[in-house]
Image (cartoon, rainbow, N blue to C red; front, top):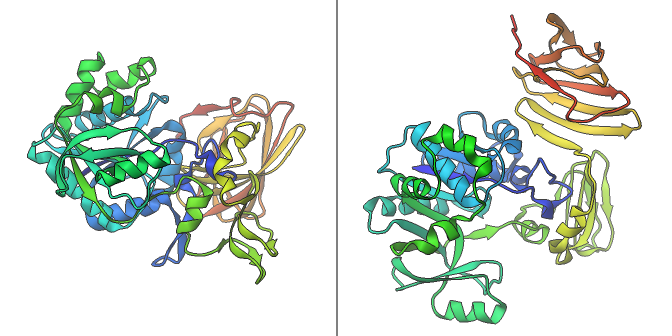
Amino acid sequence: MNLVLLSGGSGKRLWPLSNDIRSKQFIKFFKNEEKGEYESMIQLVYRQIKNIDKDAKVTIATSKTQVASIYNQIGEDVGVSIEPCRRDTFPAIALATSYLHDVQGVPEDEAVVVCPVDPYVHEDYFEALKELGLQAEKGEANLVLMGIEPTYPSEKYGYIIPESKDNTSFVKEFKEKPDLETAKNYISQGALWNGGVFAYKLKYVLDRAHELIDFTDYQDLFEKYETLTKISFDYAVVEKEDKIQVQRFSGEWKDLGTWNTLTEAMEETTIGKAILNDKCENVHVVNELGVPVVCMGLKDVVVSASAQGILVSDKEQSSYIKPYVDGLDEQIMFADKAWGSFKVIDVDSGSMTIKVTLNPGHKMNYHSHDLRNEIWNVISGDGIAVIDGMETPVKAGDVITMEAGCKHTIIANTELHLIEVQVGEEINTEDKHKYELEYK
């Protein structure tokens, strides 16, 4: 199975656990009973895929800001099609299809299945994706869509109206997101939710891409990406295609895009330090801070706390958070990196203090700054610091100082934790130069 997962968005509806770098699919909400730890949506989906098809070729289509989080959470074996900038779903899918063909070597006659990275589903969904791909390989239609059996008349989804009630049917027509009464009418006609899941033979989308975009191969398309017109796959391809089938899916499928829908799927009422008294009803707490959150007599409320901020909201009202968060001028307070993670502890005039975690065997980029000095205080673990080419073993209790202009990195032998203090008149993310590291 060739599977393309579309991973986008900053997920501001799940603030303060999401920010411009960590989207909702990277937040660890779900208990992995086997490992006894929490995992994120992308980890859950990737694990479910491999349980169904251990040989599945998985490619994630995403922006460069998410690549570090992807590698951090699921490793570097997964394929990544990096969008240099956002250009909507048709350019993203065209680029991923070209990546599969030119980089991964997938033949033109093989089926490709495209789906969002963040549905809340069980493994029967991934069995259905395999069936979708097999149906596309038959060639009866140029596109095969998954139609989800609606459980209520939703105003959030577009609708697919099939020609028949068979499990696989040609599509009669598509309907945009409706109002409530129209949704009820669609369902009475046998309509299915359009979950944005579809399959095609690789050659079909590659040909459509060449018809609409002047490019020679993957590298050429990547280099021209910023010049492409923003257009959705639906407008560019689906609405112009006559040979479309839909396969029904009646299993559990949820879009966990808001705090309200997310808490419905949480197995536990609290994650992190939290105390609820016996007067609380339908209250969920997700706390990433190291201090306890105490809730007394609350009803239908979500509480979320992170280094980014604190949310206390009625569950229904939590769906309307985005415009309020858009108005915040925020410093990024935490992020996953390919080598580990960081969390900002304190920001002051002329200084910033950060807790850094490096995974075993990983290192930061070898880099320097023009406008600030840095001090590392190693608090646990051991590794090798490289300062202007000189290698020095480091362990808990060691302090290393780097003046502005000094090239530096640190390599973790074991999991390594350190406090980094940045000092300077101007501290910003642009003040960074990267270098190749010749490590002995």
